[in-house]
Image (cartoon, rainbow, N blue to C red; front, side, top):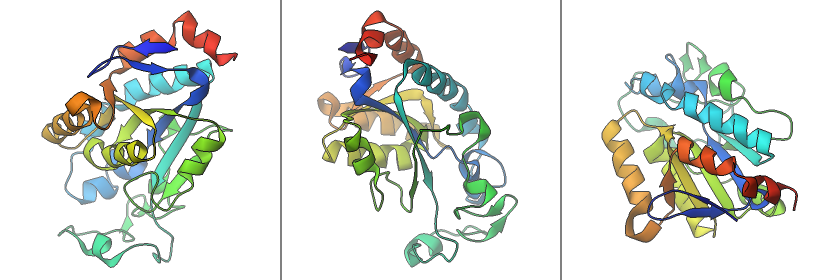
Length: 230
């Protein structure tokens, strides 16, 4: 068992029972011209989290940790898109409309894809989800349980929406979740702070919060590497 310095207290994990979850690192959210910008957001705020997330991804792969990616998006015919979701807000472009990277949040379009820096490799499942959380209307729970996963390490965007929703869903399903605060991003700094505070409040009501430096320090210890061979 390896321990990560975290709040509200140390997070313990073994490599064989832990997965790195990469939430929605899609061009539509992190690059100009995508869905995020169509809502009036400054996408550059999310790019700050990409570098630390890339380091974590590389080291987790090197250690042999199971990695799962998610993408939020909808069928080309939008039959899985609720009217309320499409119509909410006053944005000039909505889900399914044409943007500079294709139709916004539509599966198969360029903008729906994961950024090259964090792209999946062979053996890493990609979960396509129609909602905010990684477990709603997906086979995420089956994929994780078939691997014997009990602990989840979260990176991704946005902190207060898809990341926090997924953490809450994971909590309800009996998983322990660690969120790496410099590897998650929000368009709104105040939402980032509040979302992380909610996760670790009341003795870790939804999970734990740490950062890439502390996590990678733990991942590099002999205890983790020994666990990989068990």
